[in-house]
Image: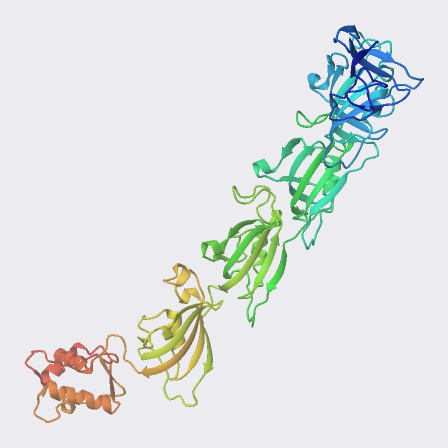
Length: 623
């Protein structure tokens, strides 16, 4: 009788050979048409295997059905038992660990009957993953076998025959006798009682001068995930570090251990098994019971409450003749960073130095101490622990709580409010017959710089060198003092503290409270007269005066005769006109002042009258 069987293999797929399209007149063997082959075939039917399958039986000729299984058929070949069938339909790319006997596991599952696919149980419906230990009989035998070798985040479909599940009895009215069960499993966690924390360094600074120890205070950022990669917390979302002491039980045990030995700037992965993390209770809704937790940690700060501020000289000053002391006023630039290099402030960005008194509590304690003993031009790196900086409060929106601060400072200048003008002669001509003093008119060359060498002004930038009258408040007091007592051709270096310079307000191009450094050279010197005077005698004048003025003896002195008399006195160095002004204008002014009746000539009575008015003066601006 010719007939055909259409089979659906339900348990295991067997190996077949296709011999070609059948010819009923010449058929010598079975012809198999594999018209539907699953994409994954973990096992093929072998001799003595048990099989369960559905079938429809029809005649080859005409296609009339003569039989149908309508239900699963079991066939026994020999006496071997059917084993678990595992379909690893999703395997993660990286699998650092596989399930072994005696491992603890946490997984999600859906349980269905092989026949019909009806669900009989689900951890998803319970809202809680299933936790158990493998290989010790706490699971049905088929599940114990099916989970072995599984990776976290792997998905498996595990088909379990009755004798490796609930057998011929079933259980609790939920699983019928001789039921083949299918579990769709997602593995979430693996751990063992022998596990320790695992640490791996992702990145580490090239230099690490200090590592975290027990009793240290640490600030760190972290991302927290479960072993499956499910996120549960991060410090980055609020841009706020987690701050704590080590070794005082404030952290889970695994994290305490995982942070030890870290450098500032180091990035680590710390994997903590459940019994060193949150254990059977978990943590709220974020961390389930018996969960391995994974922290990606970036160490931001490490310090100890016993730490003092530290100072490293990064550039020594040249020719340091004086160092800062308490009470000095200092100007310095700085860059402020945290220990991980993150900048929080900089005077350079404001293009303005930070100016303050030293040792008087105007800056944080650590900086106040570190600013003592400095030289102009020196650079230092100052590390200040929080208890010598802004402490637990920090500074809102600028300095976090309990932050270690690092300042790279560059000392521009410093002075004391009691400092005088400093004068250093760098060149003096061999002959010096006359020196500058108050009321003299001088011409001089200069360079004006800050103490760090920054040039502010120079007479070389102008066509002619400047001229000034000493003591006439034409220049700052410190420069005026520095120009006195000089010979023509003499050169000096003059340091002018701000209270003898431009003071706290500064000036155009001159910073506030800046110490100024002048390089001076006296080019010319003209002796002057006191303020308010046009002419002075360089000794005792003629007595009586009028006969000396009356050059032709006619008892009257017109302007021309008066002018000739004055110029004779100047020529013979007996008298001096105010320098820097037109001599004829000065003499005319002097003449008009003596010519009381404005008749164009001076007579004896007019000179006497004026002399009487000025009798209280030892020298007067007329004569």
